Amino acid sequence: MSWHPQYRSSKFRHVYGKAASKEKCYDCVPITRNVHDNHFCAVNPHFIAVVTECAGGGAFLVIPIHQTGKLDPHYPKICGHKGNVLDIKWNPFNDFVIASCSEDATVKIWDIPKHLLTRNITSPKKELLGHIRRVGLIEWHPTANNILFSSGYDYKIMIWNLDTKDTVISNPVKILDAHKDVVLSMSFNTDGSLLATACRDRKIRLIDPRAGTVLQEASYKSHKVNKVLFLGNVKKLFSTGTSQWNNRQIALWDQNDLSVPLLEEDLDGSSGLLFPFYDSDTHMLYVVGKGDGNIRYYEISPEKPYLNYLMEYHSHLPQKGIGMMPKRGLEVSACEIFRFYKLIPTKSLIEPISMIVPRRSESYQEDIYPLTTGAQPALTAQEWLNGVNKGPLLVSLRPGSGGHLKVEEKSPKNEQMCLSNGFDVFECPSPKTENELLQMFYRQQEEIRRLRELVNQRDVQIKQLELELRNLCTDTGRY
Image (cartoon, rainbow, N blue to C red):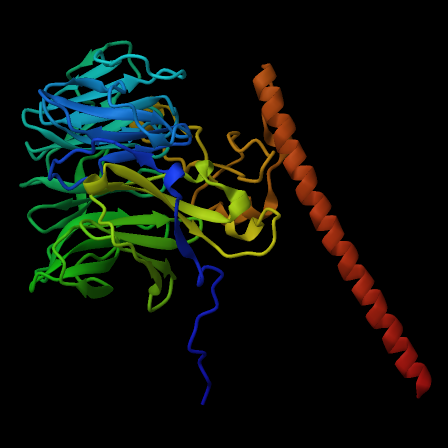
């Protein structure tokens, strides 16, 4: 009988959550009291944005990421909405552009100045007018530039092309009319060719957003879904919700068959929503409880049991909302693999929580930081609308490697190849500008470094083989 070890071998088995010290928190922040089930917080390497309390209309704050400590009570706001702000999301390809949606049925796009805010911003860069009821959710397309999805209480999802000079856009490029109730959650697959939605009618839908067709639909009676999430390219969906007995519940689905979940698990009897976050670089899934202080985390594997529980971060301070730092904003020297920003309205506090892999070495840990999604779009808005699909452009997080530069394109087919083979300099068009020349230089530097490492490994292997051969000759000489 074969013996199975009790523990799986995993480099992330001992990941732990570490809350920031008081001076690295954001204090005296008037966090919204709205009961809408959203994150209310959006983060990028430059700014933290948070929905705030505001008399007469809706507003949010944009605070420079390094400006921790107490916030000035008269700190400027972004306040052009006539109703409560329900969702905010940073443009993934421009750290100085943010979208917001509101109860006033509009979506607004804002330019944030690179210097500190000195006064309230009331005029948006663009205004999107299409929904007839309040807009509860917005999502940027993960690989195409200037494509934004919005979902309202009119049960419609609208796709907007922001690549236009118009400041007021009243015609979305597409309206998805597949839902009979309010959409509670939207999630894209890696290249943005598929959209998964969770709806108040308890159904999960898999939609082709350009065709507007529903490809799969799950109406599983014992799982009342709230949030749904694509798990990268592993062809699986993850959802959080409640069971028939009102327990908080998680479920895992096969993307190609949503009739029955692959796995279903009750977590606890609390009433707060569960927010899921997935990191496709580490294959780690985080489940954050609203109204409690817990963050559970798991590792996703392609074979059964699919979901491997790692640990739970506990805190006595409950979170109302949560923000997430993109990978390019993490502190790689501290082996930080994920960072949350936890909204604690009872203390008017935003507390960063770092997820850390315990390592003794001070050097860059290549194995926990594979190439990751960068800040360059892979497609223009028009290319995507014309039917082109491309995975995100990947960058290295190695300090000094120019992490903001594009390195590779990620797609299910070439994922393995691009991680092992680097890139072919001769396939690239010749640089025309100084910036392109600089990009090429950094890429060549990275490739030279990788080849040197390869040569060093080969040298070591040759020495080992020579030693084995010498030992073998000596042994045969004896007999």
